[in-house]
Image (cartoon, rainbow, N blue to C red):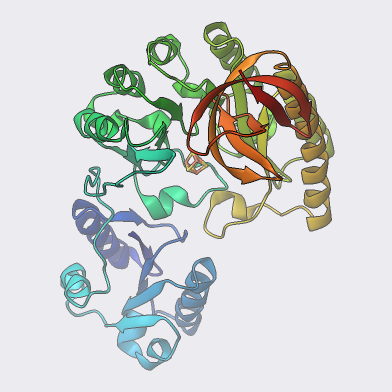
Length: 413
Ligand code: SF4
C-alpha cells in the first residue's frame, strides 16, 4: 500500500509529517512525501491564511486527480479550524485536528483505513496446481526500476524473490504434468536481490528439470555469461529472449528512466546470439512517448530493423497519473496511433523474415488447439506453427515447409 504524507504547512507540520513517514515506513508501508500516485493520502493542513486553507482544500482534489480511488485523511490546523470543509468532500475518510496526530498511524490501522502494507519479503503462499500444456511458475514480485511511465512499482512494491528451494520444488512437481514452464515475475531480472542470490543461480538449480523451460520478460542488465551458460545447461531451454526495449533511441530511453543505451542493448543481443544462434529475440516497444520526436521515432524504427526482432508487442504511450512521465506534455493521439501502425509494419516484416529463415529446418512444436483448420502450437523459439493432423498437448518434431504472415506451416517429421 502506497501512502503519501503531505505537508501543507509550517516546520512543525513538517516535523510531524517526517515522524509519521518514519513510523509508516518502519511498519512496511511504501511512503512518499511527494504528491504522487498513492492508495492513501494523509494531508497535514495549514490555516495560517485563508489562502493556506483554500490550498489545503484544493489539495484533496489534486490527490483524487492522481488516484480517484484513493482514500484521503486530513489533519492539522485547517481541519482543526473547520472540519466540515473537508469531511463533505468525496473520498475523505477521516478528519482530525491537531490532537493525537502522533497516534495517527495506530488509529488508521485500527479503523482499517491503512491496509496491510505490501510485504518486503516474497509471500510464498500461492501454488498453482498445474495440469495445463504450458504452466507458469512465479519466482518474484515487485519492481525497483521506476521506469518513468510505469505505475507498477507503486502498486506492487519493492522487488522480492521466492526462495530457490521453493521454485525448484514447484518445478519438480510440474515437470511431468505440464510440457513447458514459463518462469515469470514482475521483474525476473532482479531475482535474488533481496535473498543474496541471482537468476543464474536459480537457473542452475533447475538443470535437472525435464520439461521445456521458457523465461519471461528480461531486462538488458540481466544478460551476462553466467546466465547464458546456466541456460545452456538446461535440459530443454526454449531459446526465446523477451528483452524489453521500449525505445531504440537513447534520449527517449533516458527520459523513460531505462538504464541502457541502444548500443548496450545491441551488444547484449549479440552476446545472446553467440550462445543461441537461432534464438528468437522478442520485445516490447512504446510508441509516442511524450519526448519522442519524429527523428527519435525514426531512429527506433531503424534500430528494430537492425536487431531483427522475431516478435514485438507494440503499445501506444498511455499516460498514468502519478508517474514522472505524466508531467510531460503528451503527443496528439493521432501521432501516437500513426507511430504504432508504422512500428507494427516493420515488426511484421521482421517476424516474417525470422520465420522464413526456418524453412526446411526442424522445430520442436508443442501443440495446443485447433486454429483455422490446423493443429496450432509454438516452437521452442515461440514461432507459431500450423500442422495438418496431430493431437493437442503433444510434442512433435516438425519441418517448416513455408512461412506466411509470420506463421510457420509445417509437417510432422
Ligand atoms: S516497466 Fe517493468 S521494469 Fe519498468 S518500472 Fe514497470 S514493471 Fe518495473
